[in-house]
Length: 88
Image (tube, rainbow, N blue to C red; front, side, top):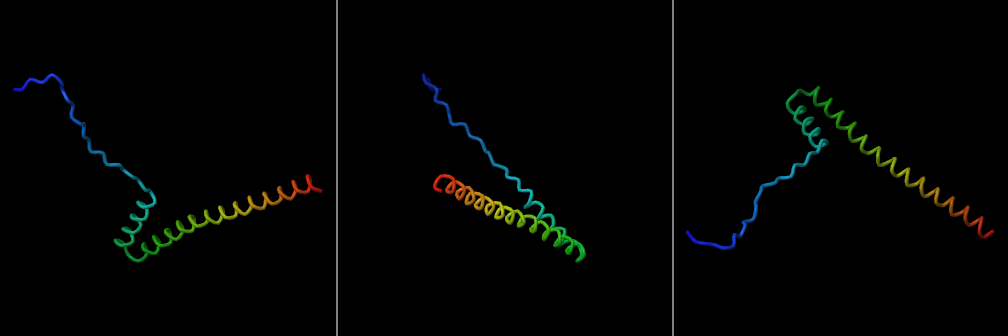
């Protein structure tokens, strides 16, 4: 047994594994499994649901584009009004 005057602490170790939850991925996997396990009628139903989910996702992009266009038009109109007010 050795005598030590200074106690050197060891590094604390832990095993942390981050958990990431993706509800869209889980839904896709669930639909895919049900399509494989069931008959063709359920496969068509799953295919329709998948198409509806894609449509909903893509419609968000259209509204964003429309919003950006509207914003540009508003800036152009404001610029023209300010130009007319100050320079004419």
